[in-house]
Image (cartoon, rainbow, N blue to C red):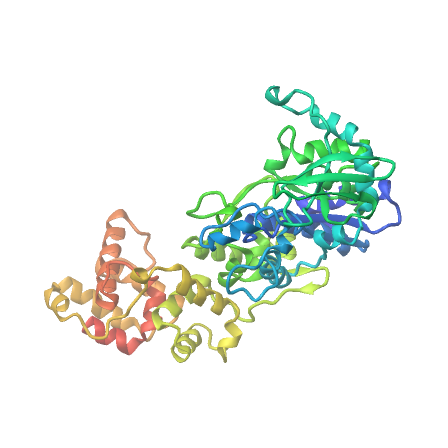
Length: 539
């Protein structure tokens, strides 16, 4: 994909990162990074934190460079609050590291952190995202950052001076005895501690805790605490040699960790801030901005239940990080899939624009190979209508799909898209909006029809066998009102003709499903079957 470097955002960042890596550390693997806190459900907004560097790192690897994507699990962060629906007794764990908090009731995992890391890890594997995971609990408790911690404590006045540049008028007064290290209490395991003294020569550190405990430790040997966030992040940039790492909008305000860290990394740790695009929020159609602290937010695993991995990848690949977008869990998913299939046809006929082609290629394969694909894809909206009408009956579903594609021999050829559509119907469509085909004709409605309506139904039934395909039935149902008006089936629709078509469609829906609306009529007719259609329309 080297010829697309000027056509899409991923290639442009890859160019910049490769050039910067050659300047900073020639001959060494290029490091891209992400960070996730498993404090709660890791939602689709958080996924952008991973997908952005993944796409760039993958492009770099496609070009033959050695590139690693580090994913830091911030599982040594404190447990901040008890989400709704969790036993209030979990409040006893507030202030402990996430890896020291028990998993939610009923979870098979060893800790709160592992409970939320597991589904994200599985989703990333399905999405084709390869990474090197780093547990910050393991890093800190193994003493990996010991020299960096001691350096930060020696340079605490310099760090405090950087932070002072961004303090507001209300907090402008000098902060006395600033310490960038926060110990976890030996007794209660929480971070409700205050450092009361520190000696640079001996590295003796004294702290007290709100629980009443206090002790003096040698920081050169102490591995039960961590640097505060605005120091921790730039420390890792320098320690890991990160060249590329994105961050959310909230990290780019004055005094934020990104802004402050950009100064601390050089003045204290002798490193450089990464190339770091700001990424915009990801929303869900019909929902407000996502927040994992509220607990009830769609996750990548939720999205992968209703859409194929390449489609979800495509949503992140086609938009610049600075552009916000929404992911559809409602009826919009059908339009999304129409757009995806249209792009696939453009790619197949070599009519896609360069940027479209680049986004598509990044969606369907990585540098390690192609992602799983549906062998014989049927339009998503058609599949959704079929599984809705058949209530998931495999025999009925296969019959209808064979009407659509005579070469299809088993349902496996329509998977995984078929399963995603089934899951969407089962989980996202309310029961009162599901389609239920009538068991018997509506005799009262049939008896009330006038001769024009009966004639329209006869034209439909007479044309079923000849037009028994998705395209054919589309032509038929739109053409009946045209023939009734004395027009050619290919005639352009007028406002009057459109009104007649709507009335005819509503009549068919009432006869077939007892409602004024429903799935697209061609799909509905295929699903019901010609014999049953004849029975229900009374002709």
